Each structure stands twice: as C-alpha cells, then as structure tokens.
Length: 358
Image (cartoon, rainbow, N blue to C red):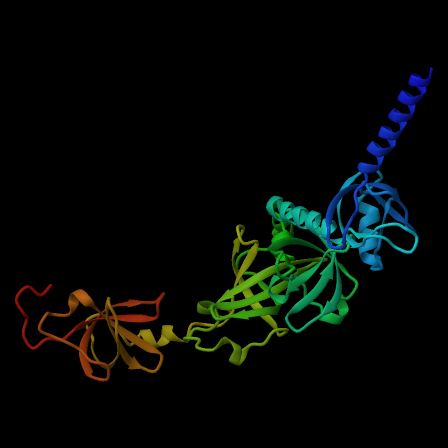
C-alpha cells in the first residue's frame, strides 16, 4: 500500500509540474496567438496560454465597434502584448495590428472584385472629400472622381456609392471613386433618354490640360460629361483654365456616348457656326497664295496665311533642293481645303520643276 501511495503522490506532482510548464510568460512587445474567450462592449478577453486571460485594451470607440462587429467568441486572433501583467494580474494586449492586417486583406479583395461600397461624406477639403464606410474604413474621394453638382458643405452626411481605386498600406492610403462605381446597366439607364445633337447643361467638375470634365444631373442621378480641348472652341485653345473654372455652369451639345468610360462626350464649339467656313471660301483650288512659315514638322511645313487660317505643305511636295526656315515667306497654290483640321493644303510654286518632282 505504501508503494501505491508514493506512486500516486509522484504522479500528482508530475501532473502539476506538467500543467505549470504549459503556461507562457508574455513579455512586452510579444506577438502571440490566442482565442477570443469573451466579447462584450465592456470587456474583451483573449486566451493566450498565460496563467490568466489577457484583457484587450482599446479606448478608440471606432476600433472597438469594429472589433465587436467583426469578431466572435472562439475566433483565432493575433495580439500585441502591451503589459505582461496588470494590477489585477492579467496580461494587457492590443488587437489593433490584427484588425489592421485583416482590414487590408479585405480592402485588397474589395478592390480586386470591384465591389461597390457605401461611404458617408464626413469632411470637404480643397481637393476632395474625407469619407468613411459604416464599419469605420476611412479614405479620400478626390474631386476628379466625383459625380455631383452640390457644393462640399451640402454633401456632408450624404451617402455615396464608390469603388476602391488605390490602396497603399504603408502610407495607410485609401482612394475611392464615385465615377468607377457606375456599372454598364446603370450608365445605359441614365442616358437612355439622351440623344446626339441634344443641348444639355452641366457643371464643370475638373479641368485637365486635354479637356473639361463636367457633372450632368439627370433626375436624381449624376453622370460624367467630357469636352475635349478640340471641342471647346473653333480657334485653337491654349489655356483652358483662363476661360473656365471648376463650378461653372456650361451648356454643351452631346456628340456621343463613351460606354467604356461611362461618359457623355460634349462639344461647346458646335453650338455656334464655324467662323472658318466663310474664310475658306476664299481658298479655291489652284489659287495662288502667300504666307509665312510658322513651323517645320517631320511631315511637312506649316504656313500662316492669315489670322486663324493655317496652310500646310506636305513633305513629299517639297523638292530636295528646296528648304524652308521659320519666318521665311512662301508662295504656293491651293490644292484642297481640309475643313476638319481647319487647314489649307498647299503646293509650293516653283520657278522650275526639279527632276523627280511629283
């Protein structure tokens, strides 16, 4: 019996020793795996294998709401140790890194699948709007990616449908686009009653070196309009920003629909008669004209004939023995008028026809 008692005592000691060695001793800064054992608005506990459960410290209400809405008891998590042992004897940990890593995985998936999100406009800035999703994801919506005519203050608190177009985890940067959230069916539905050659009002939303972007309101929907720089005026446009500003209301003519870009193509110049048509009547075929060389290009020579009228001598019409310099005078005959490019095609007048001239 004594042997049996000694054997039992030894076994109990071994068992206690075995149990004790299974506990871990966390240190500040450790990244440990654990399991959510309690999840309430007043207390979140995680079993990390220590003597006592770890207490999650989170004072930010937005992050706390995120934890409560995205986690459940039994979930596996990764914690960062803030304090190995509090006054109450519990390790104190943070779930911020875990939530952040999981958030960026989700954001990358949302961007890859092009899932449409609802965001609320929180603040208007010079370049756009600070917005956030209902689960606390904050990002930036640039003016160039919006589709509305209201001022920034009128949009505060409104919900918009957007797509994620840019992510940078290291900079914690999220860029949204309202324009990109419009699908093919949405676009077709909005433009179904619009027609080419129709006049339409819109507001300038952005000005680029190559044209004007506008916001067109149709009922309670918004769609993007675009005026290419070549469709702004009949004369050559050098500086769009000189005559147009963001927020300006303009009336334009619909020239077509870009279904890929989800955009209505517009023209300002086609609302007025082409002033060059009257001038071009003076440039009949074979008429002799004089002008000044304005520029030499790889394809030929550009010639100023009069204000607003440009002539062009094709490279193949220039004999090998003839050369032109900017500013020199040119005598030529009219070959044809290119009304689309507003250009008169010229043939140089030669004193004698060189060998091989076409």
